[in-house]
Length: 132
Image 1 (cartoon, rainbow, N blue to C red):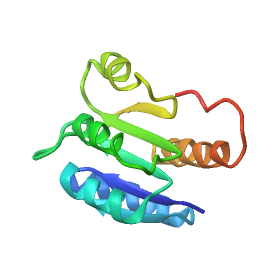
Image 2 (cartoon, rainbow, N blue to C red):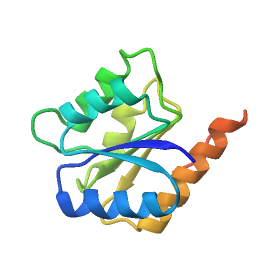
Image 3 (cartoon, helix red, strand yellow):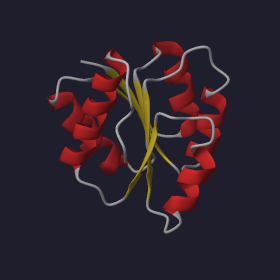
Image 4 (tube, rainbow, N blue to C red):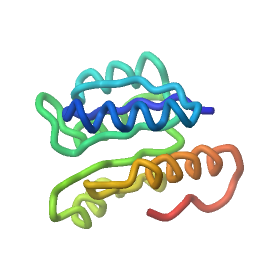
């Protein structure tokens, strides 16, 4: 399937996402913050990045900015947030990125897995990206 880096500081959410996506056949790499997520992204060049917005050390927005500086670009990015201003977050981070999706917490693990499958499938063929 695909290689996915998940940067999430809540251990329960990280584990749920990781288990769900692993069961779907994806290779999942877990990062408990943005700094570790960036290191894993650089080292493993994943197909998909899933990141929380609010994390200690390096938040998800800074992580995205740092990833933009890397030669490898992911096929898709999913940003998780429990903030009420998720539309503003989307508008802020979607500039110059057409493969980004903001998902509000709480979320359905099944819906998240389906979104990731759609992103992987879209990367394998040209055409429009899935809508959030």
